Structures are given as C-alpha cells and as structure tokens.
Image (cartoon, rainbow over all chains, first blue to last red; front, side, top):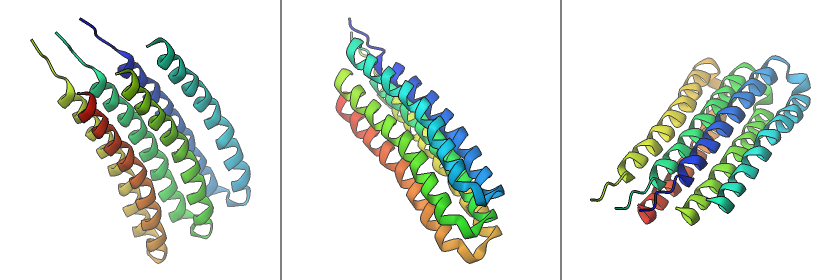
Length: 68
Length: 68
Length: 68
C-alpha cells in the first residue's frame, strides 16, 4: 500500500499563499482607492510583500517535488 | 488497496487560489467604483497580484500531476 | 477494496472556484451599481479575474481525471 499525501501538502501550501496574497492585495486595492496619487507606491509595496509569500511557497513546492 | 489523495490536494490548491483571487478582485472592483479615474491602474495591479497566485497554483498542479 | 476520493477532490475544486468567482462577481455587481458609467470596464475586469480562476479549476479537473 502506498499512500501519498504530497498533493494534500501542495494544496495547503497554495491555500496559505493564496489567502495571504489575496488579503494583502485586497488591502492594496482599497488603499489605492483612498489615495489615488500614491497608487504606484502602493503597488510597489504590494509586489514586495506578495513576492515574499511567493518565494516561500515556490521553495516549499520545490521541496515537495524533491521529497514527495 | 490504493487510495489516492491527489484529487483532494488539487481541490485544496484551487480552493486557496480561488479564494485568494476572488478576494483581491473583489477589492479591485470596489476600488474601481470609488476611483473610476484610475481604474486602469487598479486593473493592472489586480492582474499582477492574481498572476502571482495563478503561477503558484499552476506550478503546484503540475507537481501534483508528476508526483501523484 | 478501492476507495476513491476523486469526487471529493472535484467537489473541493468547484467549492473553491465557485466561492472565488462568486465573491468577485458580487463585488463587480456592487461596483456597477455605484458607478454605472464605467460598467463596461468593470465587466472587463470581472471577466479577466473570473477567467483566471476558471482556467485553474479546469486544469485541476483534467489532472483529477488523469490521476484519479
């Protein structure tokens, strides 16, 4: 019997990253609506924060690929 | 006996990506309604953030396909 | 004994996609109600975001079909 939980782990990785990036981008959109003049600065900050979550999740997916 | 949890993992991947993109797009729509003048900038930011989640989820689905 | 969780995974896929598209379309409707002049731009943004979730869910369903 082989039972692989790799896909379930991948699911939880994307669940966390998706909820996190979704929440911070939601805040970024609302901030742009309130202060349209600095929307480019808000976008830069949004990308920095999202990239931090993205990097973690990508590394975790690669480790899941290697170790199963 | 074989018990595959691949489909469950795929489900959790799409759950995370769907909720995340849904939340940020919801914020983008509300931001467009409040600041219609910058709706194209908001749409750009929405697509950037959604693409980050999309890329992670696609990569995770491919790894789930490879590793089962 | 065979116990297939494929249908459960498919259910979670549609749960995530349905909630995500539902939430963003809800926001689009409210935005259209507040700014009827830009309703065509809001509809474009809504279709882009919904198509991202839709594509992921379709791909995940195909992988679930292949891997069981």
